[in-house]
Image (tube, rainbow, N blue to C red; front, top):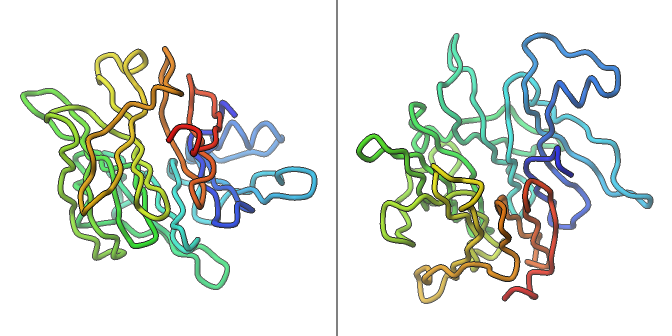
Length: 256
């Protein structure tokens, strides 16, 4: 699963959404893509009696790079990272976009216009069943890039900009947030932007009494290489994450 850069499952675990190198994947089947084809595309596969079906590109994907899809717990909203066309030009930074599933088809993506700044990266959205939305935001402090986690409530295009989660002494770079469907657990990565591969590890915070607890490192699974891109299946049964760029999974209860 090295080619896959993000995974998200439907609530019944029967459909998987993920990112593939679009042009590379299409050419592996002898299919041609035009010169404007995106580098990354969002695909889905359906579970069958013999395994997963062949990946199918989502209807809105393939023209601009889109990646790290995350499906809402009710299966009706797909959020993802992307640069998109605004008028005649692409946005200069990756931002958060979303599509709704209506009558069995995904709608044209819309932007979280009050969250996205376009000059800075807003990315890696994660959504709980009660509408809690946490995402990564790029910030600059004394000419140094820092990544922070922000929290807000999802309201479609009316979603308001979030407030920073001060889980560590600021500034500390955090990214790849993942909420459990009930909003109780928050998994994310902590890292040094200047030494990402050696420093990137998974942490967890728990929402108790209306606030997030002090984060703890997931020492049971963190390795000497980068550990990142966590994803919890519905009901928090399985934790998927990337260990040194390969996806692995563990039972979530085994690390609690």
